[in-house]
View: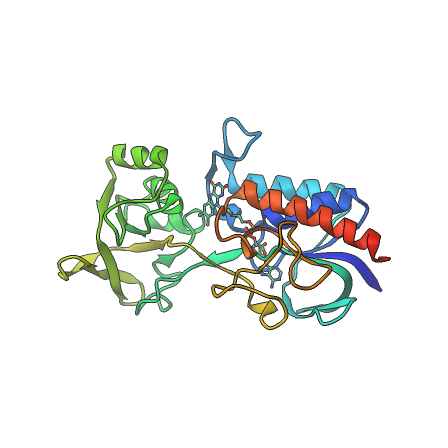
Amino acid sequence: MTEKLAIIGAGPAGLTSAIYAARAFLEPLVFVGPAVGGQIATTTEVENFPGFPNGLTGPELSDAMRQQAERFGSRMIDDTIERVDLSRRPFVLTASEGTYEVQSLIIATGASPRKLGVPGEDQFVGRGVSYCATCDGFFFRDKEIMVVGGGDSAFQEGLFLTKFGSRVRIVHRRDEFRADAVLQNRAQANPKIEFVTSSVIDRIEGNGKVNDVLLRNVKTGEVRTTAVDGVFIFIGNAPNTELFQGQLEMDHEGYLKVDSRLHTSVPGVFAAGEAHDNWFKQAITSAGFGCMAAMEAEKFLAQNDA
Ligand SMILES: Cc1cc2nc3c(=O)[nH]c(=O)nc-3n(C[C@H](O)[C@H](O)[C@H](O)COP(=O)(O)OP(=O)(O)OC[C@H]3O[C@@H](n4cnc5c(N)ncnc54)[C@H](O)[C@@H]3O)c2cc1C
């Protein structure tokens, strides 16, 4: 059976696409993939999503979006797409537990955290190295925590981690931070937070779990060993688009190329959210792109005899 529309991804972009597509009676299949709820489900406080004057948690926001999508007939599939064939319609999607034929496709696979790429990082993931404060903060009660990064995520998650750690040191390779002013003021006022600027981690060391890091001052070259229990890394993202290599046009960083109405280089395939957006990277903008992609998919299907 050929489905009208599949959506790969269930973050803000995919779930918003699903709400709009389901309300247009396209009965979308939504592949949830490895990150249920998307990146927003990994954060505690979301204070900038309109409609929630007192804020809400990331999981609350993604759960609400999912319920809304299901209410209108979206079909959630807890599986990951492993291969696609976009060479002709219907497109063929291969998941770990099945193969699907679809007339149109919205790619909302988002992005994954970028790695530091230093020795010890991979070895200690889950044993002191983390990319998710909400998931792992609890394990660092009264422990020494280091947060790497200088943007909103580093500050937001660093503030959250002060609930657990005895001290939270924010390490940034530059002198100045990119995080927004409100977050910077909050962090500066928090007695548990310290800042280590112009510094990078050269190596993460431990014995079964993280014990220390080698910190290098990029101005003086001085390297010192600093004892730490947890290293939380928030240095940006890379798009989850390897699946489409050779089939869709993308830029040198792997972001999908789209036109102003989110059409990719293959007619009938649309992209929404951080799979193509390397600039705004917010839940609300991703949701907005999701809405646009679903409206375009509906038009495409109406014009191309779904
Ligand atoms: C720690 C943190 C805090 C944040 N805080 C805020 C905030 O306060 N406010 C804000 O607006 N934004 C915040 N953001 C940014 C926001 O989370 C992202 O902009 C948004 O989640 C991007 O949405 P997306 O749907 O494009 O992709 P994602 O959220 O990355 O979702 C991608 C989805 O695709 C799925 N997927 C990937 N590959 C496959 C595959 N092969 N098959 C099937 N499914 C697949 C994943 O499982 C996931 O469900 C934060 C991000 C982080 C990391």
